[in-house]
Length: 133
Image (cartoon, rainbow, N blue to C red):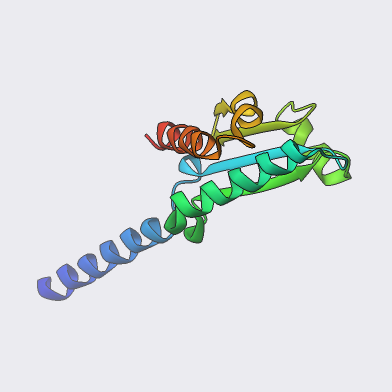
């Protein structure tokens, strides 16, 4: 009888551990947002393009699992306006968020997107990694 109880306890432990492995802690989820308006210049488009590509190429497994997301949010649309209000965003913004922590990369995004996309990619990597700890 003790053998059956031990086996059941072991299996239950594996099951619970599997649930936690399959569903990462939501506080550890990292969201990369690029907020913009409908009318955009070349630099605005490049900030989105470089940021999205950087997230997808730097963290493919975490993107696939949903642990890291990239979203482009149009502040001129109702849903975008609501998300912007939630994060107190009023204009074009590139931001990395995890729980209550946030890293604002807007200035670097607009500085590097056109002429130094690798620098922007490095800044995104640094921000995501700092929030992963």
